[in-house]
Image (cartoon, rainbow, N blue to C red; front, side, top):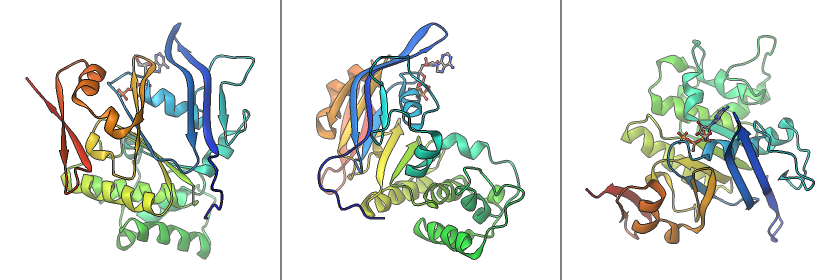
Length: 271
Ligand SMILES: Nc1ncnc2c1ncn2[C@@H]1O[C@H](COP(=O)(O)OP(=O)(O)OP(=O)(O)O)[C@@H](O)[C@H]1O
């Protein structure tokens, strides 16, 4: 669905949002705004709070009470999980580990319409549902694998099937939690090029990653998370510097620029 709005509209807003677990503040964000259709990446060390941040978006995690609502989704302080799921398509590397049944890939994709990893037992998809699933698989270049058992696929193929699952209900934004973790270079190639295709098709991308190589040229804004706080938030070129990356990860790092127009980045450890 195309949106005609030209002015910036917030998809997600945080105001003094604090998450406490086991008596410890694991994330505290003063202010943050993500516009509809905006592409961002979150980068930071293990345990920094990236997943917690994203779970505030998906409403899997609730912040401490404040008089002013700390989280708004689509302008709504009381958005439900159903509201969130309509807008977002979610892919995470851990989802793949949860697939432990022999099912044709297309069933996994159709499950995206019900928020499940396969089709619920009583559900028999109609032709329209099936066609939607095949369209999503076509977009990810895996339509020819529709009838193949998901358990017999390579990690890269299965990951693209999960992308198709996230797209099947036509969400406006994709939330990708470490989509390339555990993939070989071929799998990474296809996942990254799929991300580019989806961004070009107008989907917003919210990416959590440990690899600057995942930050496709369509992502212009980078949010750095460290020790439960937003360490920095700004234009990708200003964030991906030797100094910023070395401070973020607390080890000496160099940022290498690659590609015809220096549009890709990678991190090199300098010993
Ligand atoms: N339920 C919980 N109880 C206690 N501590 C928790 C809980 N959930 C998360 N934490 C802690 O909160 C911190 C932030 O975790 P989070 O998963 O958000 O980090 P992350 O940046 O996504 O890490 P990674 O890159 O390793 O996935 C970590 O120190 C983690 O151990």
